[in-house]
Length: 192
Image: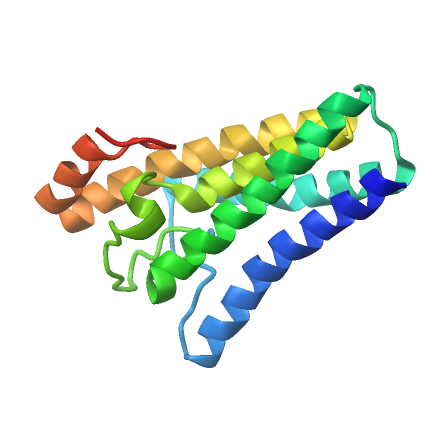
C-alpha cells in the first residue's frame, strides 16, 4: 500500500509540474506545446509524433501498474524506484524553473527562446529529459512488469531521439554559442 501512495504522489507531482508550467505560460501568452505542431515535416514530425505517443502511453501504463499493484522486483528495488522517481520530479521541477519562459515541449521552430546555460543547465544539457527518464525508471522499479517495462523503454528511446532532434535545432539556432556549451556540458549529466 505504501508503494501505491508513493507512486501516485510522484506521478501527481511530476505531471502537476508539467501541466502547471504549461498553464502558467499559457496565461502569459506563451505557446508551450510545440510537439508535432507548426507544419513540421519529415523525420522531425515522425520523431515528435512517436515521442508524444510514447510519453502518453507511459503514464497510462504506470497508472495501470500502480492500481493493479503488479511488481516483479523485491522491496529494496522498489524503494530505489521511489528515490529515482522523486529525483526525477526534483530534476524536472528545477529544470523548468531554471529555463523559465524558454522551456518548451517540442521544438519551437517559429518561437524565439533564449539559450539557458546556468543553474541545472550547467550540469546537464537536457535536465528536463533527465527528469523524465528518472521518473520513468523510478516508476518501473516500483512496478516492474512487462507493460511498464515496455512503455518505459519505448518512452526513454523516443525521448533520446527527441534530444538528438533538439540538439540539431539548437546548433542551427545558436551556432557557436551552442557548440561551446555542448563541448563543456554533457548531454545527460556532468560537465568538463
